[in-house]
Image (cartoon, rainbow, N blue to C red; front, side, top):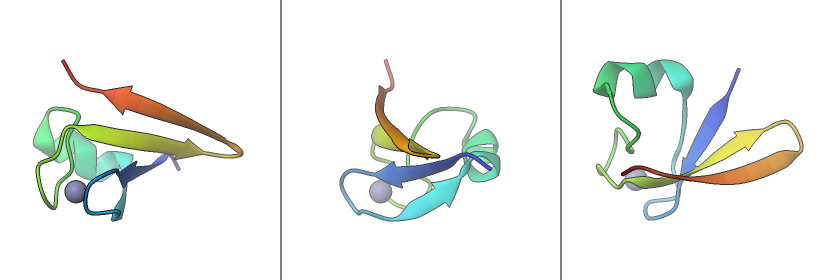
Length: 48
Ligand SMILES: [Zn+2]
């Protein structure tokens, strides 16, 4: 399971919650800069 972390509200969510939004943004606060926390690596994902 791929998990994401919002850089603003620091809440975690998973890819299925992202799919509902149809875009890369936090389902809680709508912030568009999130971190992808997958396994050991953490990667910053920025929506255009
Ligand atoms: Zn957020």
